Length: 252
Length: 141
Image 1: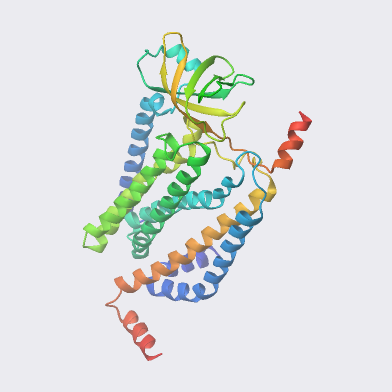
Image 2: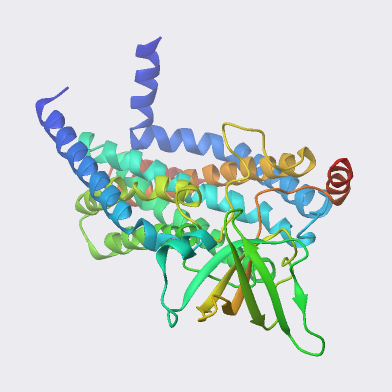
């Protein structure tokens, strides 16, 4: 059984097999992820009750929280694949870093901007240099650093290794962002959702939020599969299987 | 595991460990500077001089808000449940500013120990609920 899983994982690590697998999944998974996301957003923004204190402004939570979660989990994934890339030199791990970095940067930026828009009417300011906001900005700069590293290094393998090293070392920022609201005094409020206690939110608010988070994750998965497919085609363009694939595409 | 991979593994792990230790030491050293604001009891301990621009934070005490007629001048008392601090502020307060709500104010402390704020920000908590639920909770109290 374990051998079978191992075999399957190794086969996923091979670019042509992964390409085929991703192409099979995407056509049905992408519409489903759009559906989940729309359900969550429409429920949250249109039908969830207003908040007793913040009124309707709190509805930014349905965009802010999922994108902040994604910004951090993409970095975590990049650190894991960076680790694999550094030690096993797996091709696909490097391609993952290359295609995930811009997506992670985008979600982090969405979290920062939506947070600023939320902060103005509630806190009274767009931005403060408190620990949570500053550490999230650093995360965005880490993404920007990885992206610019890739565009400044022509050799793909070297670029992969440099980016992997930043991802692995920079992963320190993730627990700091997560715990910043508990370790230091910040303007940002502590987490509504913790593992140890019930959410400090009523179910008619956290259920749509949960669906939004699942929707954001599935959209991320779809985007990742698609950008990875493109990256595989670009990097393997001189191999016979890509030529054959492209020839077949032209014939169709 | 292949010896070269094993070696790479050790190198990467030691780099990661080194960074973690360095980050820990930096943040330990800086921890007081990373805090966004002083609480009223911190302020008592630290003895901040009169001309320093600082931020203080705490909960607005019940029945302490005093609004002057025909001006934007407001005074109120914040507390961290150990020490209190009187704050005066001239300007528009954020919507979420109210009794028993958290705030962060920026400004200077004067000789009498009153805090003259030039910016007041509202802090909100992590609790969200519909108005009806909030009302039931309040009635129960």
